[in-house]
Structure formats: C-alpha cells, structure tokens
Length: 150
Image 1 (cartoon, rainbow, N blue to C red):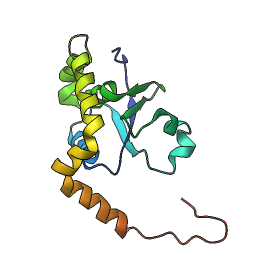
Image 2 (cartoon, helix red, strand yellow; image 1 turned 60 degrees about the horizontal axis):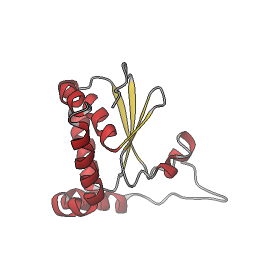
Image 3 (spheres, helix red, strand yellow; image 1 turned 90 degrees about the vertical axis):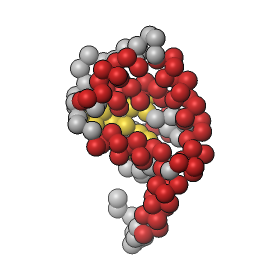
C-alpha cells in the first residue's frame, strides 16, 4: 500500500446503522488527531451532492476513505488510514500498510466486513439498539408542497 506522503484531511464513509462501525467511529474520534477527518454515514442523503457515485462503490460492503486530494481507499487500506489519523497509532498503521502485514490486514478486514452484521448483533447489540432508538426518536420533517429541505 502506498500511504500518501502528506494527508491533511480524510472523509470516512461507513455504515451508520452498524453497531460495530459506530463503535469504531467513536474510538477513532476519541484518539488524539494527527490530521483532520470526518465520519459520514453512507446512508446520509446529502452524500448525493458531495459524492454522487458513492453507491456504485458499494459502501455497504466495505469502508471507503477519501483523502483531501481525492484518492480513494477501500477496506483494509481505509482502516490503515483511519489508524494513521490517530497520532499515537501511526507506527502501527505504517506497519499494517506495509508489504508483510497488509495481506493479513486485508484478510482480517474481509472477514470482519463480511460478518459485521452478525458480529454487531453479538458484540454490539446495545449499540445497535441505541442507534435504532435514536432513529425512532427523530422527528418526521414537515414536508410541504413538493419536498423537504435538508
């Protein structure tokens, strides 16, 4: 994996309805930052405007990261960049993105991504339930003639 020389910012597209994904999001956000990032659930309707072809990249199957220069990274490489964004985990990120460990990271990431919904139900059920409760508490927009404003 070629890790970009200088990253200023990352956009991380993830499943906002998955307890495991939301827990990872919270963990990364709690770390001291090496550079800026934003987590964006791929279900966000506003994504149609800022990333119109995201659905074609199947974000429901793997995490996708976009750098400030527009480079896209998927799956294990996306995870490596998330880890790289954490100031105190950059060494581990560089090792995981290297020739020796990247194949292992790819297999582990594929295993997790393929089974994330089952794993989430087992290990992150509380998080899934909290997400579901939060969604049910959201107000329905008062849509007038012709549509709703975001």
